[in-house]
Length: 148
View 1 (cartoon, rainbow, N blue to C red):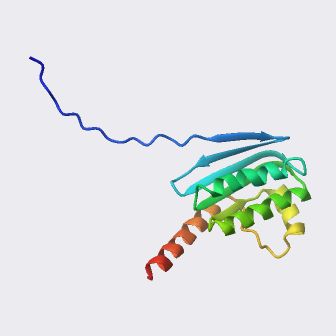
View 2 (view 1 turned 90 degrees about the vertical axis):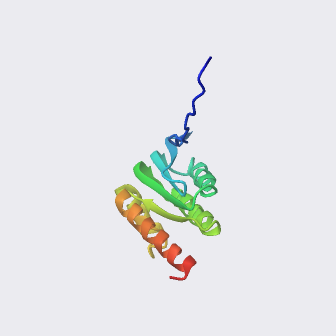
View 3 (view 1 turned 90 degrees about the horizontal axis):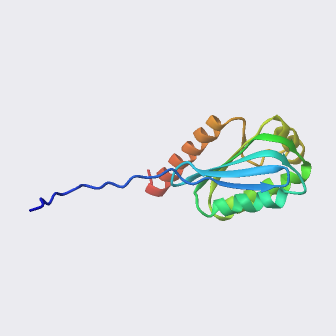
């Protein structure tokens, strides 16, 4: 006669699938870092030919997260027309109450000094600074929500 046993099952969280999109001479990737945070990385060239694709890609990921990091350190060329993609992303994040940071390399920062002289967009120099700022913002939201 077979013996019945009890087996305890536990849920294992698999790594989030990474989304990849090619647009012109750029590649966009999105990766879920946590349940509430998405990392979007851009590699290659961002200009007038793919700025709308970048804006839509970022918009798609503001729908599923509360925090977004846009990593542009792999951008080889950032045309002034590409600034409109960042402006559009800023609007989408504000509408959806998504906190976000842009990690910008020297090529992107050079254009940002011209197109955003008042530093309206949340630009930082590295991923560690972006994570630190978003952690701080999350703690502030938590304190306000609980009246601490």
